[in-house]
Amino acid sequence: MKEAVGGTFMIYVLLIFLAVYITFLAVALNYAKAFRVKNSIIDIIEQNEGMDESDFNSREGNIKTGVTGQINQKLNDYNYFINLNNDQVNSYCGKEENHFGLGYCINSKTNDLGREYYQVVTFVQIKFPFLDNLSITIPIRGETRVIERIKS
Image (cartoon, rainbow, N blue to C red; front, side, top):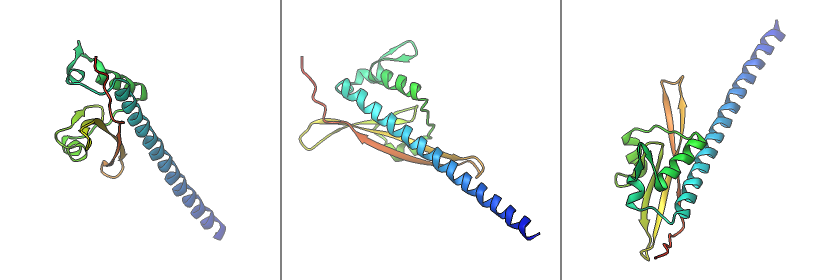
């Protein structure tokens, strides 16, 4: 009987270890995806030499064009969709920034020399469905290089 109880205990320890390992792996993969998305958004902004007001409002039908259209297309390729409520977005991004429904924020900033750059915020959202729908949201911030627009 002693060996049966010890074997059962070892199975429980193995199951707990396996659950912790799978959870750690899932969080690491989501964290890596959020970093990849942040870097892609920064690359798109830098390739287009920043964003203008027209980039936020230009549409062809229901599809956004311009820089935000390129960003949204890249996010669709990555399958990156984070749903945050307005309180969470305002606490992580502030009220004056540009918020987008796919789970990222872009804010135009100027440095001490008056040169423009952009701050990008993406999110990792970890949901625990068994713990009363508890979720943890982690912001990941990044900045573009200083944007030097070529004047025509």
